[in-house]
Length: 364
Image 1 (cartoon, rainbow, N blue to C red):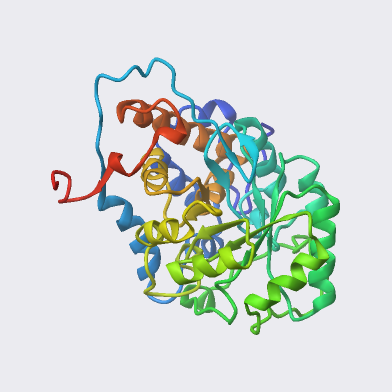
Image 2 (image 1 turned 45 degrees about the horizontal axis):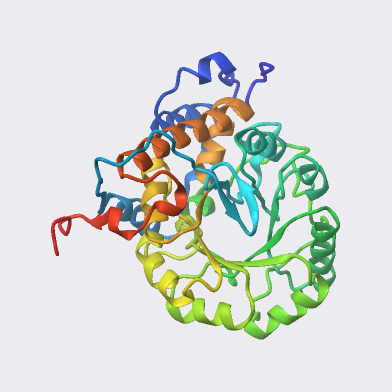
């Protein structure tokens, strides 16, 4: 990797230096050193008190893994499919905007990293590189869509995503109104000159506050061949409505705690969503996922795969493309170990019998 200085003068780690990181927890402090303070606060921040963001992490700590010995695990595969396409790891690079605040290559570096690891990425509406540029690199990428009151802008993005081979539209449904982020109000992120939101025109835009379930028909009419994923489903009731409206997948998500304070942690919401859809659509999860053990717990509770948000920015800010690749390799390594120790040989062999809430391990 070429030595490029970050915005506050600290050098990114080289590929050799990144290779000496052996824990995912090492990335955030290294990223914090390299990001401008206001930009670190933007990446790591939350709504209100931060209760939701903390609860997402705490939910993983409340679950433990139950192992099954004397199983032949000489061969363990982490391969699976997402929306019908093969990936080598059940971990996707989730949508996060303005990745050039973390590294000049931004979303292009993330796309290259996802390709090297054998997974895919979800490109944010607020990306700093265009969906055409990223789509030329990433494997079957998904496009995260904010639905604007300007119907023409929304229609244009949908058409461009379909024309550039994006496998899915990920409609974010959990941010219909202005969010309350005190950290950003106090110290807004510093966006250097030349960094723009590349997928939308430079005009005032507002996320549509009046979307309903019936609005999905308009989206389907515009791009009938592209898969539709709803990001921000937390209840059984909404999961069943997603099935009724022909949605292809849902992401159990609370926006990483960045939109609504004091809402249910995603890992706690996951089981009822999985039960409600009863296999009729795919279920994914984001929010609080950091380690391979977190991925395992989410898979055991019914998620088909998980999405990483903040960790991608931390990987970029640590070492660009190499930082993201290293982070994902560490997640992969830990997950492979846990799958084998739990007595499974493949992702589809992970089930609820392999995880329990803390304190309930010996119940039953």
